[in-house]
Image 1: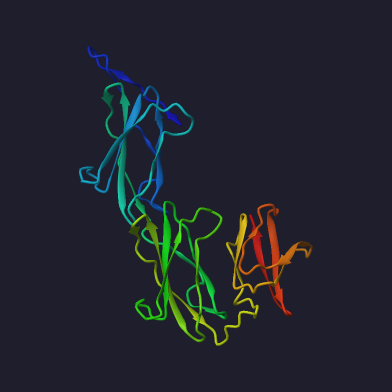
Image 2: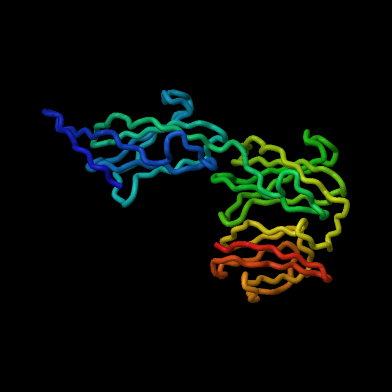
Length: 299
């Protein structure tokens, strides 16, 4: 988007000087949900390009300062650069100047943003009781990650002989939460779990530690509201399951009771509901006379 400024000619030199651009996004002091982000500003009429700087110091003189240029902007919208491979939990400062030929404007205002330091856990909720021998573990995705590492243990120091540490690759679908699993759950036990993000060989801080409790029965053939779960809810296209017995009957009905879809579960394999119209639905899981029904929203 262009923001109009007057260009002033310096007598005798023929050089044109433009005013500094006005920054647009992200807002000053914004928190970025990830370690990559676009930066953009209002275009200046008559510019031949821009020079920009990003640094961890607001004086732009640290050994991590980046100074780069881009050519003249001719598209619609805003001149934009895309930052990636940023550090976790770090405050960055940025500014832009207009170029006109061999001259450069003054710098724009300096803005800052901070990258996310750690993931946010989602399921099972802190203190939840799991009446099954395994459970899905999922958390909110962030931009720019290359994978996640997660741990669960029976002690909050994560150093018992039963500690489980696993990694998963990059989450490539915005509609699906990154997810792992906790297996071979012992009855009547408290488990502790946490997650960290990866960016190539770099790891973020660990998330806050959450717990889940195993009930006195972990019968995988039992279907109850406490064991069966669906996510995300609301769902855009892919609906995920946890703790669904293999060969269980699945039925999706409209809120008025009309059958929309039915079939057999293949373990916890997800359903693609991309063609399902927007609305409120009921999903029922049934096996050997046991069943439970939950509501979900299709966006």
